Structure formats: C-alpha cells, structure tokens
Picture 1 (cartoon, rainbow, N blue to C red):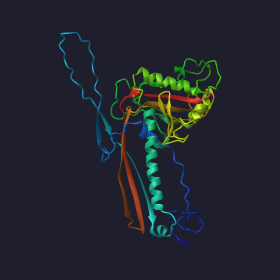
Picture 2: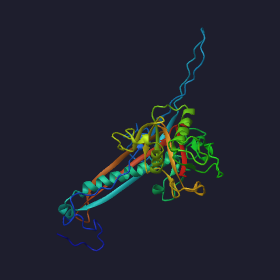
Picture 3: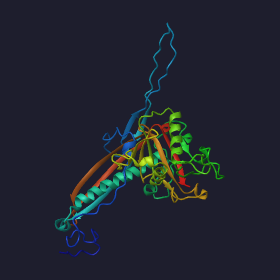
Length: 357
C-alpha cells in the first residue's frame, strides 16, 4: 500500500517504510572502531550536567627525595595541589522524525534503527575530534577544512614548554629524527615508510620500517620516564597494512581474540604498546598512501602513541527526548551530546607523520 505525500515532504523519500518488496533484513552500515574511550582517562564521565561545566583535575604532586644520615632533622615538604580545568565546551545534536503512517506500515523499527545510528554518529564525531586533538591536529570532518595543525589551546597548557597544540616539540617525529634516512628531502618532511621484509640484513637508507618507528616512539616515552604499563599506539589502516606486511607473526592470535578486531584493538602487545587501528586519525592532503619524496610535506598520515593518563575526557548524552510534532502526525526524536577533553601529560604523548614510500 502506498500513500501520497504533500509537496516538499522529504521524510523517507524512497518509501522504504512500505513492506512491498524490501527484505526485512536492514543492511547496517559498517561502523568504524572507536578507540578514544580505550586510550584516555575517562574517570570523569557522568560528573557533568550542562555545557560549560568544568571538571577540576588535581595534578599528581611532585615528591622530592633527599639523602638521609643519622641525626638528620626530617622536614616534610608541602604538597602542591595544582589542578587542571577540563571544560565541557563541545556539543553536538541530532533530530529526526517518524511519521505515524510510516511507523504503522513499516516492517522494521525505524525509530530504533535511526536512534542507534544517531548514537553512533555522535560517538564517531567525538572519536574524530579527540584523536585529532591529542595528535595535534584539527580534523576536516569536524572543522570543515583540510586537516591542519591545532593552534587553539584548550584552557592553559599543562606544562610551560608545550606549544599551542598543547604538545611538546621533542615528542613529534619527522623524517630528520631517523638518522638512517639519508635521502635529500628536508628533515621536517614526513617519514617515508616501507615494510622491512624478512631476511633483510642491511639497514635501509631511503626509508624506515614500521617497527623502527614504533621503537623510536617507545624510546621517547622511556626517556620521559612514562610508565610502561598502560601504553597504547593508534595507527591508521595504511600503517597497519605495512605492519602486517613486515612481519607475518602479526597475523596470529596477537590480533585480538581468535584473530578478530575488538573495538579497534588489533594487537595486545607490540613493543610494550596496545595497538589500535582507526580511520579517525588525522590525514593531511591526500593522506599517507601517497608515495614519493615530493609529497612528504603535503600528503601524509599521523600516528600517535601515549599513556592512559595523558589525556582526560568527559562526555555525556545530556538529553534525549521524544515528543509529538505539533504540525504533523509524527514523533520527533532529538538528542544532544556534551563533552570535553584535556591533555594532562604532554610528555606522555608522541606523534609521527609518515607516508608510504
């Protein structure tokens, strides 16, 4: 049965609510794995209620250790209670409607399907924004422009030596940081990567391998005395492909459980990192899959490693409601998502820019 629609009526325009020829099995879109909640400190979830609320996070105090000899008068130090402000300053919303006739004649529950998809889109937007932020970039899908370096400080920097992206320059890897690469392009270009095949004996001079880059990221965290427990690494699909090509052992049970990807986690332990794969990382220009030295400054991808304590996030679905549309026989569903994020320990974050050689 089909119903006519008023001029300009655009809800479910294909008439898919009508059970004429469509299968009852709705084809759900493949959903990208979300990793932000697995790699950030989210102890502050649920402590916010309205946009603009601020969560005060007490910084771990520094303790001074002194030499002791018998008879020394022990003078206890005063502890500092320095804090960070995590401001809930990001908000997104969705709204859609379900017509009574469409709902009555539908062979699927469009209310449930649309609500589920809306929740995913909010979570996906959150994931893109936070991964971009902790990598030092603005994401194009969030900000409507090509991925660019972040230049807006969220509150105040955690340490005085951090830049406007709230990161430490010493924790950003480019081509010049890997001494084995002797090709002529500038040191601030992205790192040309290629898998080092089994049996190779000589160190490459034109490229680095994924394992070499991961080892360098681990070294930088070691030098900052970042705890080895709780380290993670987020890479994009191009990097993940090269990593798999480099070492066939990565095809075994290290890939999640029974070889499957679970919430983006693809390797439980590689060089001390939990490794996640995500397509929500920043991608500049045409991305990391663009080869050639001429592209190393304009087309590249970003990977990031860190510790669970490096970034704090707080999020909350502030309000989800259903109400009757006063102008039609329809239900309107709408929801709003509030969140904030703050880099607390920039010394516990390291990023690298790369492209496929």
